[in-house]
Every structure is written in structure tokens, then in C-alpha cells.
Image (tube, rainbow, N blue to C red):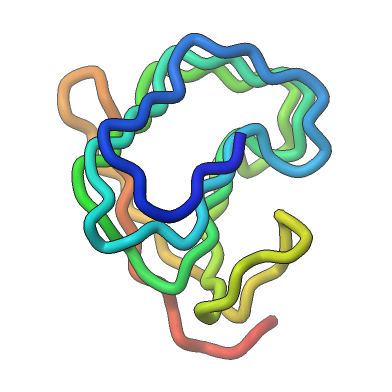
Length: 122
């Protein structure tokens, strides 16, 4: 599932992803006005990643990722990469530098936010 651009009140809910070669869910190059994205109650089995965020900074507001099950997925389940402002032509890549994710738990949901680092590639 590739989520891109201007997302408003988008929901990825109650799906089963099996055998995805890169990531089950990819979030890329969101617009500033994106809001209210919900990724919940999904099951991911034997995929490269559960979720990959590919962007140069955190954009939009109200994104929630909660109550998802990830099985037989190599570490890490979630990966955030600095895109350097470029779309990802291969739908999966190494980025231009590490990103820092912070996890904030509120009740039963987990909110992810981050700040892309500006260091060079490793």
C-alpha cells in the first residue's frame, strides 16, 4: 500500500499483507495539509518491513498508527528515511541520512513523529 501526497481522513484498516518484498505500507512525500491518517488493525506476515516513511521532514498532522500485528518481519518493523526531497523511484531505498523517530504512547495508540537528520549517507 503506497500512500503519497495529499491525504485527508485516509484509513488503512483491517488488511492482511503477506509476502511484500519491500514494505507492506509506504508513506512518501506527504503534503503539509495532509491530516488524519489512520493505520490500524492490520496484519503483516513475511514482508520486508511493516511500515516505511520516506520524506525529508515530518508533514501533516493527526497521523495514528495503532494495534497492528507484524509477524515474521525482520527488524526493524518501522523505518523512517530522509528522502533528500526526492521521490523514491524504487519504492524502497537507503535515503541520504539517518532519521530519528520518537515514540509517544497515548492510551492504546502509538504516535510516531520524527525529525530527519541532515548528515550524509552511511
